[in-house]
Image (tube, rainbow, N blue to C red; front, side, top):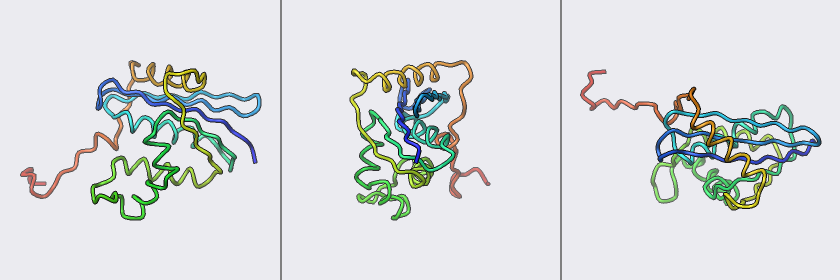
Length: 165
């Protein structure tokens, strides 16, 4: 299996607010950077989008070491919380709705295709890969062409909303 090292980070100016993600993939002498910005999102969504974007690039099963400064991402995967939320129909053990279920579903599917070991790193510290991803994420969030985070901005209309729909 191909060995890949991935660094990821998300950024948000306000929470919610404009946000972006950055990812850096390295395998042998190959290196690829990814980033995108969104007009209205959350930091946790951008942390997850960075992981998803990086794993989407891999076109065959790989051994991956994935570095993230997000306890939300690392703990939810490593401690099995996300799988638990999924098995309960995206409901947490406290009976509250799990946030970002759209992204967690895709992340779990992508993670299952690879052998992934997650490593938490302290953000804004001495980790060159994480620092580069932070730069990519911040630049993307400040970009002039921001995408729509459909999963975040989706409007849910209930039958009693009075809109007659």
